[in-house]
Image (cartoon, rainbow, N blue to C red; front, side):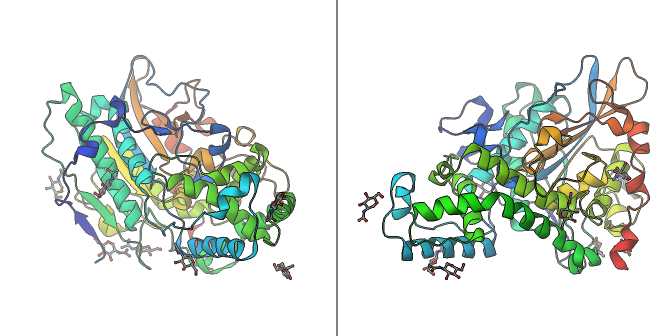
Amino acid sequence: MLIGLTAFAGFAVSGAFARPSNRGSTLATCDNVAHGYQCDNAVSHFWGQYSPYFSVASEIADKVPQQCEITFVQILSRHGARDPTASKTASYNATIQKIHANVKNFTGAYAFLADYEYTLGADQLTTFGQQELVNSGTKYYNRYEQLARHLTPFLRSSGEARVVESAQNFTQGFHAAKLADKSSGKLDSAYPYPILVIPEEDGVNNTLNHGLCTDFENGPDGDIAADAQATWTSVFIPPIQARLNAALPGANLSVTDTVSIMDLCPFNTVASPSGTISAFCALFTEAEWHQYGYYETLNKYYGYSYGNALGPTQGVGFANELIARMTNEPVHEGASTNSTLDSINVTFPLGRHMYADFSHDNDMTAIFSALGLYNGTDPLSNTTIVEAAQANGYSASWTVPFAARAYFEKMQCHAHREELVRVVVNDRVLPLTQCNGDSLGRCTLSAFVDSLDFAKTDGHWDQCFV
Ligand SMILES: *[C@@H]1O[C@H](CO)[C@@H](O)[C@H](O)[C@H]1NC(C)=O
Ligand SMILES: *[C@@H]1O[C@H](CO)[C@@H](O)[C@H](O)[C@H]1NC(C)=O
Ligand SMILES: *[C@@H]1O[C@H](CO)[C@@H](O)[C@H](O)[C@H]1NC(C)=O
Ligand SMILES: *[C@@H]1O[C@H](CO)[C@@H](O)[C@H](O)[C@H]1NC(C)=O
Ligand SMILES: *[C@@H]1O[C@H](CO)[C@@H](O)[C@H](O)[C@H]1NC(C)=O
Ligand SMILES: *[C@@H]1O[C@H](CO)[C@@H](O)[C@H](O)[C@H]1NC(C)=O
Ligand SMILES: *[C@@H]1O[C@H](CO)[C@@H](O)[C@H](O)[C@H]1NC(C)=O
Ligand SMILES: *[C@@H]1O[C@H](CO)[C@@H](O)[C@H](O)[C@H]1NC(C)=O
Ligand SMILES: *[C@@H]1O[C@H](CO)[C@@H](O)[C@H](O)[C@H]1NC(C)=O
């Protein structure tokens, strides 16, 4: 199967989400529809791509400006919180086994480790992660109610199970919000909404998943991120490693083990259905969480963004699809687009007002970069922390946390003849200086599209094959 237009007739709206979560949940949870994860923010908002989605502070208000009406919105979403990947889960477990085999005495903040059992799975969404996407669908409905009352988004998902399930959970939240909206007529015969699933197998042109850029996948470019992280690790990990080894006599934790113990904070937190902060988190200081967040930022920046010569290139296909949708013109083919899919209106309809696509953190990073977002001048340092506020708002946790969502909006405003474009990433309105964004972060559609030369000229795609 290369492509499935799946209607998912199998699932029904269960009681768990028939009541929209924005009406006040009875579960004590750190997560909410409007602002996402809000528990121990000084720590949890610094977990890089392992932070659960939270509203990033925005200098520009993210509400719809006065005398404007939203005419178009594309959401690009990451899947929700998941278990560690299979290889990571094996290595975390090995670190825990090693501690249990060698440490006899657990005291103070480490006491919980005596009875800690490694039970995390691999690759799948956690219950908390599913709920994040239900909440995201609800929020999207509420935020774009004027459109959403009458319309259903055109949905696509990359093929991995956790991404497809995230798309399904999003539709559940959207649908429940629609049914709860007194003005929507309480009918939603289009549900369950079709989701176009694009497989992730080798050789498939999938604008929501990388894999086609041969020199990136096989060549030295794929190692830049690991090199940058290794340099940063040698700066910030030794004192942490020494402290843990002193507190856990016999453990003899390596650098990798030490990073793993830090990873176990976010992963055990999102394994809790309510997102209860894990005991692992208290083993580290706030300053150390900033360092850890930066470690994850380096991975994204040198893997899929401006720090990698072939990073932004891999987001070009989606960027061209976005241009097509915003301008209502056929897709400029090339890069990772699939002409078979993009040339027919069943799989690539133009003229719709609401689109929703589901993908991964790496792919979203490449797409943001292909669109010229967060394009700062200085490459990120491998030896000195650069906080998001000093990096044009760029960090892994501000851009691609679990259940991250970017809104690409068009709006029609009274004072302007031409439609305006705005980009909102995790509730932070980007200033869009690259197309002379106004004080509300808006560019005219033509100025926005003019700023996308990198994508329109296929952004070095040929260099994937030299
Ligand atoms: C465990 O460590 C504590 C604090 O260092 C110490 O007081 C205690 O004697 C130790 N217990 C054992 C059984 O070694
Ligand atoms: C962790 O490793 C132990 C020892 O190899 C194994 O028995 C256990 O099943 C593993 N647990 C998980 C959740 O993978
Ligand atoms: C997410 O969707 C899956 C698949 O439809 C469903 O089994 C699960 O219950 C949903 N999760 C939540 C929290 O509603
Ligand atoms: C493009 O999509 C079609 C499905 O419509 C599929 O049959 C074909 O294999 C895809 N081609 C590539 C290169 O991904
Ligand atoms: C960080 O490390 C990467 C990988 O070695 C390298 O390409 C990059 O130039 C380094 N960045 C800086 C600012 O030195
Ligand atoms: C600690 O681990 C290192 C490998 O990471 C090993 O070379 C060393 O011998 C170990 N030390 C002890 C005391 O076990
Ligand atoms: C898939 O992408 C390649 C470039 O990587 C391109 O040559 C090919 O024509 C594309 N296939 C389709 C069906 O668009
Ligand atoms: C889709 O394309 C077909 C054939 O080109 C056309 O007949 C049909 O009206 C189009 N449908 C929509 C919804 O645009
Ligand atoms: C990012 O900025 C640099 C320097 O101005 C420019 O050369 C590059 O084309 C920009 N990248 C994108 C994707 O816009």
